[in-house]
Length: 325
Image (cartoon, helix red, strand yellow):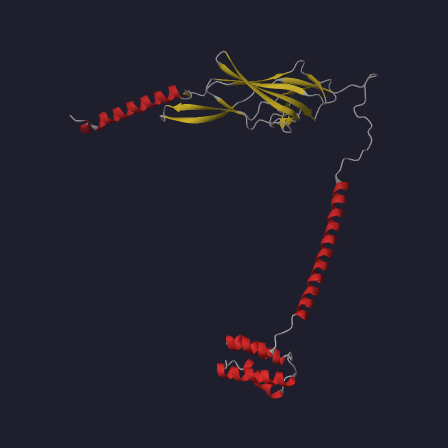
């Protein structure tokens, strides 16, 4: 029996065997694959003693223990300027059998220093430590000698890993949230005694540093420069206009005889029409009435005269100008 004649059940078994071997090679050569959610623990460790005055910086460390091959996603963990809301307490004083107990808001913790993240291995496990500098925000029970609080359990941190689902026979990447074991700390209001110093001190009003004088100087300098540029521009335009007028005064129009000679060498109709305009403008003297009517008909009739007609008219203009001179 040739390989191409394998029965279909045998071919399926061979393909499943190849797939199983490929999965084994992938598992051994790549990251581990879990059949169940890997165990993870997270808890707060707070600096001792756990009693702080209002305004003190609370040093607390979030310790997460994970299995090898598991990665932590702490991109959403709060940083400087963010807040961590504390878990509320249950108000048992106003609780009836038919009502839901109300909650007592416990305030927030503001992150006041940059978080520090460190990892190391211990006992075959991976230990991740995230250290915070926190400051408690109101409210606080000032009637009690100290107010007990709980560090938050709902911190946005997740573990990511590869998991093999037997029923589906496939591997998927999972992302599970890690819940944190809380820890107690206490807030104590500051007591006033003979040695106490005021929380707030008198201060003097000092004008804040500003760049306004430099901005104003730059504005005046810009305004002065703009005025100088405008004056220079106006002067340049005046000089150019006067120069143009002088050049126009020094450039005399050509004589009729000269234009006629140019036209004879190059009988261009533009030269002929230019001579008519010079004549009508009185450049060569006062035009005669009959010639004025004739040149008007030539210029505004729209009919281009022949070369012979142009020559006749040109010669007449030259003769009239010569007679006047």
